[in-house]
Image (cartoon, rainbow, N blue to C red; front, side, top):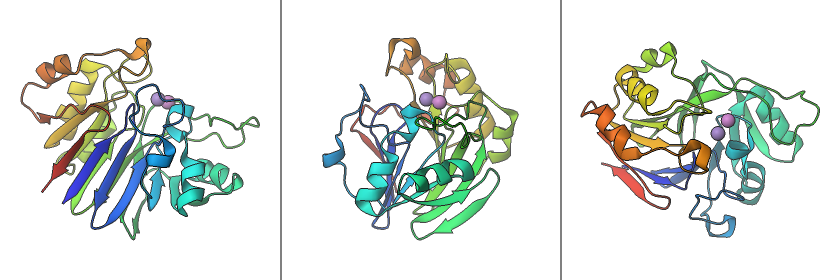
Length: 227
Ligand code: NI
Ligand code: MN
């Protein structure tokens, strides 16, 4: 059984087999979140798609508080280590089996600068994350354009977490094409509505997907469970 809880913007908590991981923990300063750091339950790991402030977010304070491991591309992992967190460095194309499950990093087309790195030394490739917990594969695309690389994951993904907000990432039309590429059972839209510039209507996305996958629209604080 896998439980997916949305905490606004691109932040999700995945829980299975008594383990809990958080992806892109943008909580402090997130106008769309439902939680605060002190109400966020203890996590085993923090998975990061990239270093922009709305994704790196509270990763280091959470990792330090919970003695959790940050999982990220090599340069971003090194940046987090420098801030005093424990990090596991990976890179795109690589997978690793952790106590909580398996993580594979996959390509994303986006910017690689890291919030808080004034030197620019840690700038890295952004990535998507395929996390397999409780026997279910979740693909968090990170911030990305639609890319043909997504087709490589066709049939391997149970749940797609996909931006629809446009401007910085895919908008609704490209996100619906991503669903065609990946062929997940379920898709949960993200990265929209946090600010006016990424306003989008998830019901319009649902119409665009047109039955090719189950579209689950979560409000911050809501969960979706897979048996
Ligand atoms: Ni970004
Ligand atoms: Mn973003």
